Length: 257
Image (tube, rainbow, N blue to C red; front, side, top):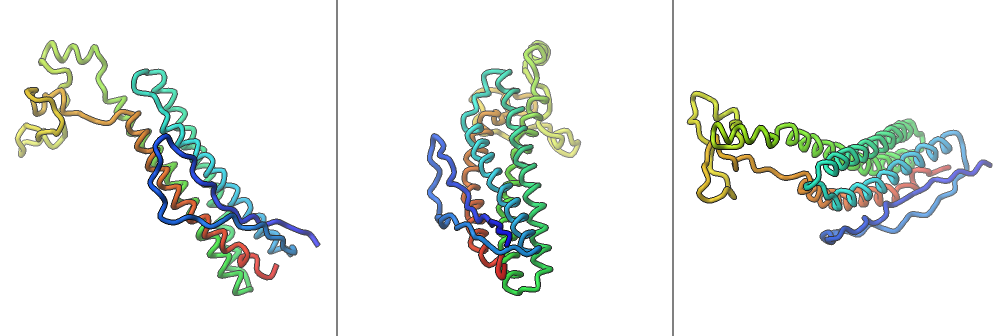
């Protein structure tokens, strides 16, 4: 009889950053064994869908590792060319993460459908559990892609809203301040005073309020990238936990095969 392999896999441990992450609260179980099942049409389809979903999740694990390393090593704040090249590279990683997660999510949905149609009560329950846990890991990976895109959109906004040196020099000559944009729309309201609240970290003795050159303090791309790297590395723990739980249901998911 045709033999098919169902791979029950667990994500590899996250690659270390220069600064170690906090210790995990739970250690995922060992890699599950490869199960050999006698193939019927339904068993063959389960194996095909499961392997495809697992491959997508593992590919995203590897891409997430690559993303964290790229973010943590980013040196983008002193050079315009490096800044733009890094933005493009981070965007490509976000696209790759999203594409692989989307592929895996499609296979997970097919596994849930197979579980719902199964006449074997044990397989129905275990296959759904496998799909749900693996789907959770893939959803977390997809959210990383979305959040990375959000970071890039914020950086793009900062780039577009920044005044260049010539604009700042004109404002200094005319107004005595390099940036004349209001702090917020609310400050232009006729029902509110035309003044900005004090900002922590502004220089002592410098002007405050709408025309303060120090009121628009915001993180650089490098700072955002470093924060994102730490956040994404922490998320790997939850992804690995979901994948471990999915692996624990593979044998039951092929019950009767």
